[in-house]
Length: 257
Image (tube, rainbow, N blue to C red; front, side, top):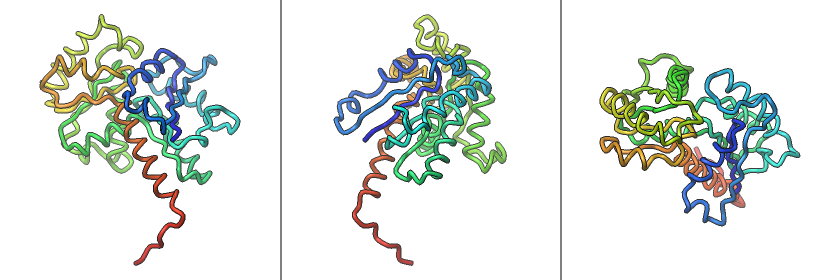
């Protein structure tokens, strides 16, 4: 199984944080080969994605590389592609549409945002998001509305377990800085837990990768801090296994009405 892990910004330390957060059981599995992609330092791809404009620049810079057949990171050479930006990033839908167009039915393309939200829905516990800077709050709330209701048809149709997005008021590249850890803990405690009554909290940025146990040791009221990269990678592996089982059959049994 070949998986492409995409960091769509140009900061290599972010890719390193993602790589270092991956469970050892996955890294030790000889049947799974992980390839890591970092957005190019081409003057277009942003060092961090902090709003819709930087997200678009990220897409504009990365998409041509990921869809070029001669590229080492050509999406068509992989069984699964995971976009590691916690947003409704254009790369997810664009690559999904490209795979449909090119009839690459075996490829699973998804993003850490989408997997995390759907995982929480299956848990059926109240959940919220802790993100980086304030600009993400409205964007993520809208994105949740878009994927959980028909074309974002209205908040009144959202499930009651969804409690909203909270900003840590820390920039993406500073999330791993020990100096701001206490500040983030206080925000989660006061807003995600005490105000919003969340039982599960999604760590809504790839910059939080590997920090779930640190938060859990400080805030015991939360049932689960969800590493968006970790849960999403596990889901992509499951999708790929399912596809392999399906498409590797010598004959697919016909349907009977």
